[in-house]
Amino acid sequence: MSNLDATLGSPEAFQSQPLQQAARGKAAGRRYSRWHLETTVPVEEDGWLLTYLDVITLMLVMMVVMLSVAGPPGDATGKGEPTTTTMPPDPLATTTPASVQSPSILPPLPVTTASTQSATPAPPGKEPESETPQAPAEEAWASLKLDQIGENVAITPGEDSVRFRISNELLFGSGDANLSNGGNGVLQKLLPTLLADPELRLVVEGHTDNIPIQTTRYPSNWELSTGRAASVARYLIEHGVPPQRVQASGYADTRPLGSKENPVDRAINRRVELVLEKTKPGG
Image 1 (cartoon, one colour):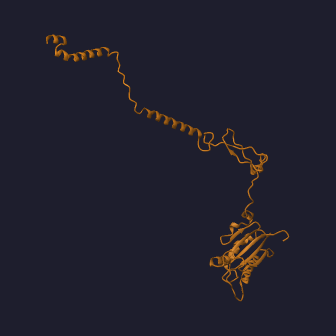
Image 2 (spheres, helix red, strand yellow; image 1 turned 90 degrees about the horizontal axis):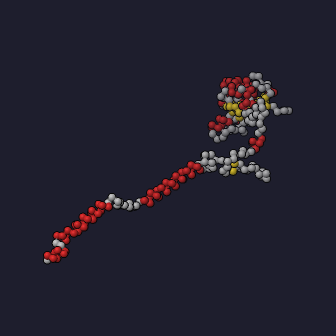
Image 3 (tube, one colour; image 1 turned 30 degrees about the vertical axis):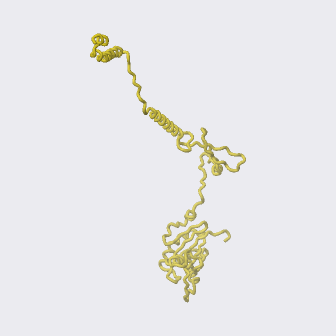
């Protein structure tokens, strides 16, 4: 056993060999550790997500830039103002073609219309002639001072005549053709207007409603309307209106202004109208 132990060594020595080899390995590792670097490769788990987000961000930036350059709809210059160009006139066309919107750097050409062709520039030192319509009827009768007549008379000016409408209730009593005191006052305010122009003819018209009347003096509305017109004409002649200018007529209920079926409209139909007319040549 002693020779075998001498060859293989003692059991303690046999058990200590791995420990000695480990110690020698550690010593060798410490010897080369200054030149040896351990490299660790990181594990890329979500690296593709960063690249995807970068691409999306770049696309969004490009879209914003393109929208800012394009501008609002209809804008061809990117400055918010659409550019329009006018097509040249077609010599064979009878009307001026409409302007066509298209991108262009040329300024738009004005479209010639009938109104611009007819307008001619005024010479220096002279104001252009106004194209206002004719003066209204109120200005044509300005000399009559229609605004001073009062509220009891409805005035309707026209081109060749001016009409004054007075309710019968202001001039006469019910079923009567004699002027009341209030009627004399209304006509007195109207006299200066009627006397302003002696060249105008004065027509006095009497009107009634459709309710029939039958008295000894006025058998029908015809006699009543004619008697009321005659009373007004007589008053005007007595206060300075030349009789050759005056004409009196009665129309009964043949020329109503409103309906004949209700009291309100019937009251409107009962009236006296004085019409100043321009004398026609040869009339």
